Length: 385
Image (cartoon, rainbow, N blue to C red; front, side, top):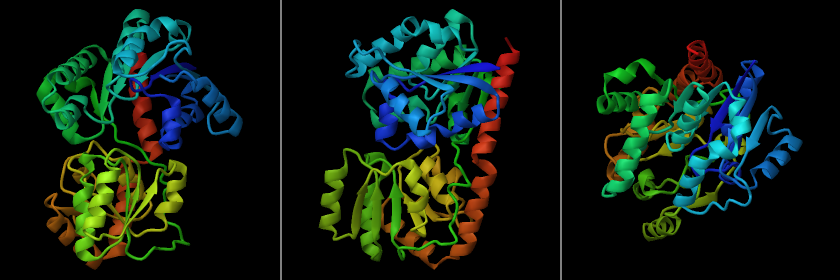
């Protein structure tokens, strides 16, 4: 029986997963690996100084397997800001050497934080699987186009990971092509596409579905990337209500936009992932108007729950939505194009699109299929030792 060490994204704590409602989603893949018997124990290396306390509460409530040991930051090491989290990421191998040395293979939750896994892998000669939910350098280019330092750090992070990791995974075909073009064909042999997963049994249409009319639902961060200002304006143009789940720095600005265009918007705040299946079953339509995506989990979950999904024809989204088949794609990001796409969705065959979307997600993104893909990666790494 093997032991897995998982390195959280740099600066991210178990407490943050709980506060943002991500915990119940993120833990699923690790429970699946334990339930299958593939791993006998899993360590989570996190950046929270009270994560051991949080873990105990989760053990006692049955939400976290006791076979998952949470190894947080020492209480005396205060984490505040990028500099401290970067420093701790380099010191973690020394602070947690007993637990690290107990692992047979390492995995990262994202590219940012993979340097810690690489250091541990080189010191203890363990294979490393670098998993990325989004490509770091591409995200930095989108969010900080003029920050050369962040660009350089992201590039070096990826270069080292692709050079020294035994296996790497991205979530989309677009990211796979991007990585190969940027870092060369040589990495294609250790690069795999492993999509985000969804519990398709939990996120499933209910026979007792009670729809809130034609109100649209959005679930995600409130950030410029999500293009919610145009979605709000589009809903106002066609007279549709929009319910927004999530939090972020754009909240005040978006509320002002909604008031100015007299849009019918309700702000539902953060809702834990475990409550989302019931929420989805109160709606018929889901919108994700982002400017770009990696492979959006909320979109996959909404489609699995039988909602008809509307999104922009952009990276990540257009690998999930096939226009007129599994959902509807807007050809442009602006409010006029989004409004026309909303009208197409309302006039379309709801039952057919809903069924096709559900079947697609079950085939491509079920928890079982993604767990099998990861276990195949781990088997290959362990055999190479």
